Image 1 (tube, rainbow, N blue to C red):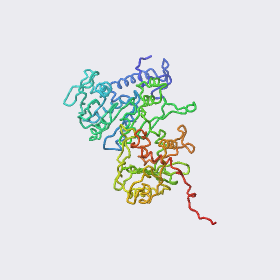
Image 2: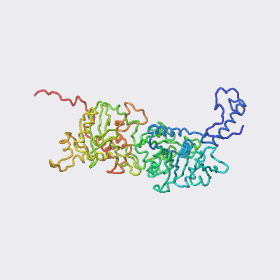
Image 3: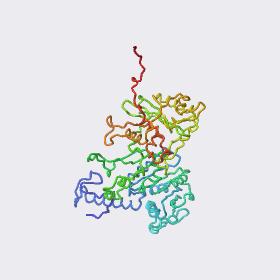
Image 4: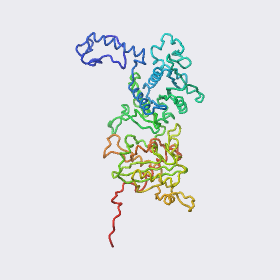
Length: 569
């Protein structure tokens, strides 16, 4: 047996396995190894040992690339292609020992080496944490020719200044490369309002970064169209920072989780799906998930043993980097790939209804829905939306936005955009919408609380529903006053389907949302009810409840509604 270095990536050849061309399977070698002549075996051994040595000596050029890293690289690349200007952001949520810190250390070094004069920040909670958890990785990925192993110092010149020790990290928490690029290490224990520094090309914020720091870093990156990378193992759960990125995020890729089997009636039905890539509500940001099993150097087998018998939340967090909300959205069955449909896939035929939730001093929130003969409900328009120009207003913007503290998000600009609208203004936008859709609603419904509230007008005491009838020539019915939870239960029933089976004619949800209805989609993903009546994302959920609880709302056969000539007595 020839002595060899054990390595989790570069295999030592085993019986029946060969790492090179199968054409070499010509002769047998002693000790059970197959497919090598002695000369071939020794040549392979020498090259294997040399490759392992190169990986250790210069990991920046020759180190192993985790396939999950390529997904993160692609996220940065795709965002920059879509947004040539501005700050692009990638949050990596990783299981324990998934390789996210090594990824960001290498990406930091790529910026520093490949762009002379680049400016980079690496941020951690404290100086001690930085010396322990960040700075060794930057030292490791320093190109070999700039890494003086004997003294820990690179001879200082007019520009370069690199001094590192295992105990103290980089001297003065900074280093300068011979090409003029510089890296600084910053700490969240500092006062964010007093931090001074250069305009940046890249910033790596590791673990527990807070929203105020993120906002400050963005402005450092803005001038140079920089990148912001955040690495996080969600041990603390759904923190304000995680919440800001995940609330309303759309899942673009997911994969089966081997540690989360699904059982039904005692039989294995399959594996739970966990996210791999998500698009945030913030258009220039994405979330990438690193799994512990992605990194063979992280001993994933030991992690699997450790998590045996653990609850779902612990497995999601420790193995897959998926945080669990402190209080989950009220609609856990809602899925992007199932319930959100391209607008042109909305059926053209059916029975349409118009629902309105007018708030005091706020823009009226509205939804238009179509019921089809198969019992399905299709939400095909919302007002205000985020894609249409409103005369006298412009683009309204989002109804609600992610917030680091408020569970249901914070109010967006749209909630006040049309606050000064008159009845004539609302009549105009409603008629334009229905003309564009070529669809006349069978009925209109309005929140009974506001719709039936009497107020003094020039013509006397009238309700809002009365005034809509007189001033807009639109007759509204008052919605149900039933409890919120009852409507939520019906909505969940409409969203429900058997996730263990393919969706087909016998297994499908009854509620679908047009991709254009971004405000409603955000609300379905975000609303928990924890913020009460002032919840920023409650209004569109209220309208869905009205739809679910409205008596007689559903598909109506046009022939049954057609007026026919009478007979005689």
